[in-house]
Length: 284
Image 1 (tube, rainbow, N blue to C red):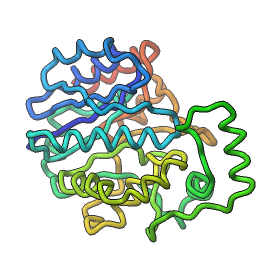
Image 2 (cartoon, one colour):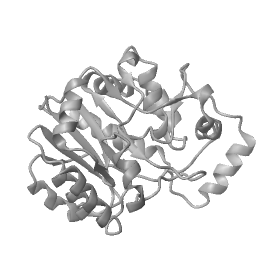
Image 3 (cartoon, rainbow, N blue to C red):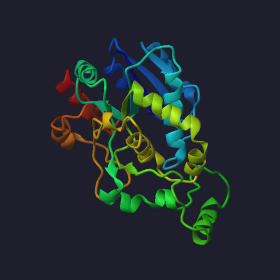
Image 4 (cartoon, rainbow, N blue to C red):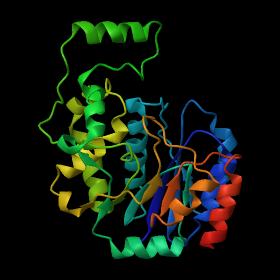
């Protein structure tokens, strides 16, 4: 069984290199999506590392925009078209780092080859959803680029009725739902779903933060829902009231290593060098 690690990156080639070198394994390949607004030349030297490939269908990624989910889905589709057959597709940020050995990760995935790992919070049970409904009920012009777009966004939301999700689906999502590990069956289903649902794609263009609720919603409403384990295998800490996870520091080591997670995020080089060094010592 082979594993495709899809890595979303927009800065710090050296940090990305460190992640890839740490995860070198005979059954691992790496597919890197570089934000299209970033010059890719600074990253291309990474092709010299075994198993490293670059996603060709790049997307300009705007924080909170549907473009981020598009980058993830485009990358998944491109890897699925590869002649290599993969048992799992593991989505990472270049600011992630493993907390366990590659052998432990591979053995775990091999044991769970009929499962996929996606974090979610059911809509009716989640405080997160109470704050997140505006993501699809209101119009968001995050991915558009024209003068006065936020004024226009305000006007649209003042005069137009609340939007309704275009499909009759129970909604799932959460702050930690962006990053996932899908087996081949779930990855293929997800890719095929978007090949057919152009109406949904049009609706999502005007949503905010779709990477945190669309994929869990699709998979938890699919015939494959019983394969999904509500766990994304990642240690992520969101401070109260913050939209972004905290940059992890030395004081987080105990919680990270005792979390039984396979990855942690997020780290930011060079500030995080000492933390990553200590993780290496603990997981060698």
